Length: 340
Image (cartoon, rainbow, N blue to C red; front, side, top):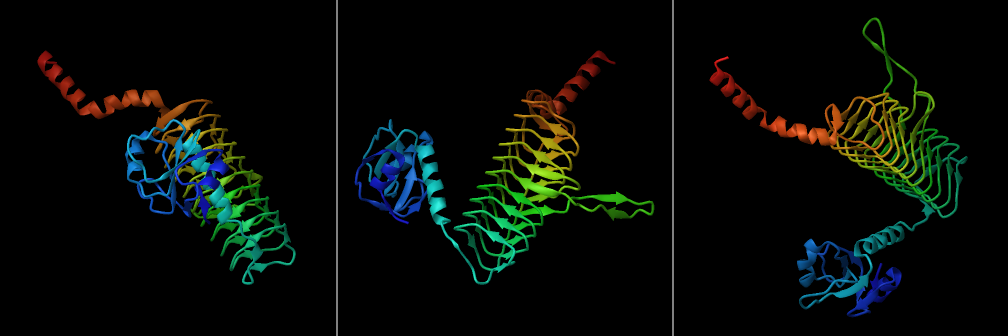
């Protein structure tokens, strides 16, 4: 796709300073941009790069004042970062604006397919699946029986959505994710063996959910594993059976949430966090990376540590943790001086 500086400015309601007809066909970081690239400058830390960038067009804030000559055409906007994000979204939508059914796809005759859908090579879609308008399913994905997929959802290559799962509208599920696999349920037996407990529930994803690559969301033992509207999951996250995640919560990579825990709305959970089963995390909670949460957490708290506790208390305690050898040395010196 190719665009002129003038077209970009019109899209962003900005103004051009330089050649309005210069053409760009790729997006780049300002320090790596070459001729034909579109980039942006919003962080003052990167200002030196604008004087040597090879980018054909650079989006800048209205108040940017160059202190040296520029070879790049400027598009001035109110907020360069937000404007570049708008273009990224537009570029991504244009890139995925495809439709049609591959001849190598295996689609059960009972499948209900909406308008303007795309199904790539070697996709397998089982019986009684309902797919709404504008859904894109990329090569080698698997859609199990009785799955429902909402309008505008994108399912990338290699995704597995297992039977009875419900996927909302405008979701994005990245490569390798598995939704609806069995929960980890086993009953210990007297002889030391473990008997598998059938997992008969489902997974429900709300609207605008994003699931990162190689993340897994287990079906419920009974009932529903629920992911709320607007939830964003990073790569390699494990969500166990019967977990509930509230609207607009974001969770970073390698976090694991054990069965039947409930996470509130608008939470921010760092990477490599472990959350024990059958506990409740309130709304607006922030959990720092690598924390271990073993008990319920009230609304609006920020916690850290293993087991996790108040973030402020953790920071105060850490001063003593790291100085503990010196503290012990000083205590021993005092004891020796007092001849205790």
